[in-house]
Image: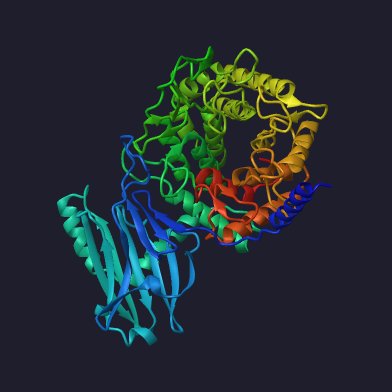
Length: 601
């Protein structure tokens, strides 16, 4: 064998070996906290708040991103005429008070542990954040309260920085509320300032914890869920709640797709998964508010378009954004060249989410209120998207492919799920003629998928009608065709598709999940966390529970060491988080669905 060949083989074997042995480790660089009015970024390297934005979405009305208003915020000590920032002290632990948006930082001064708490308060309906510092008695006795300072560094003048102190059983509690003034009526602002000045720090912290405990008390969870899985689920639910806007008006109820430092936008796709997850664990008001936000959005801008001779967009007036929303609920789409990037999975995923909400909440009153618009601006346009081949027309698919796109299995499968969900809703509304039509259309879609979107003697599902070359035809998101029962778990197509994923999309032999596309032996691709999590219920339904358990355990362990955060991607070589995090509907929501899944979606 030639030397170059031996070298290549050695490197490949070394990478594969190290790749399979990657252990869960903390690689997150920040922790966010948000309360539906504002958002902050706690930097884990600098150990202080370095960003604060006063909208939950990154783009609110215009297409200009919301600016960061601060340079830094935190605590420091004054000793011997010197300022000592807390971020210079050794750190024992940084994470969330589980199931909340409260960031807890435990540090040491010699052998004395001190705790810092940072959060955006749910108990206040204002744009504000809170910082608390708890010094135990052995340190507090030697440190006057005026030697403990909270600070805010900002070029913007519109903040009130209100400090308050409490001695409690010889411990010292120092707190600060930073309040953003614009938008608050003068009388309200005056009254609020007076109330904040007399706050008791420990009681304020307990009140925030109580808010979250009361919120979680609504949840209906599997009886055997405990330990790390339970903690990951609790925090995943909290992330979804943090990501939902509480701004009055047309933006109320939207859920942004992640809580990273930029690009926090609500998408129809991600919100649908968040709604399904919230509905299954009993958070019905949040689900309903998210559904209503999308239903009442300002959408319908992309009708009767044509790109390269192919129909592109919707034929009818429609109610849902074909990509994402501004904070105030205006439909927006990115452009590739001169053509908009459009996702035709929106109506199908919304109908699935609406059905899950109605099924779990039994809220027929809401369904009756929304039904006329659902029927005319979601169901009817979706029916018209079915082309001559009985597949959904070309679109951008899961990965935002530019026009003229492809006939993606993902999109047609989501439409199938939407039609079957709509048939149930239609039956509840006693519209038998529409119900029969929806059942018939869904049957045609299933038949078309099984005849046109498979390949080989084992009928493996393919990514799209136009992409059938090996191994590029593989797509991890095809697990949803099993979850949505486009193909039944006992059918050859379901089993052979999972076999193909194991052979060509699995990122290691060490219990981890899947890439979105086929993995090149010499350039390993990242694990696609949404695919891994959605594979879990598919594997369970196909009697592959051991494999499902392996992936779930890996995902839980990885999240647990990273403050229960679910990322977009994971590097299979070193288990580093990649992309955006924490992901919401297609991250935290998918985690909730994995942890609560049974044999059947």
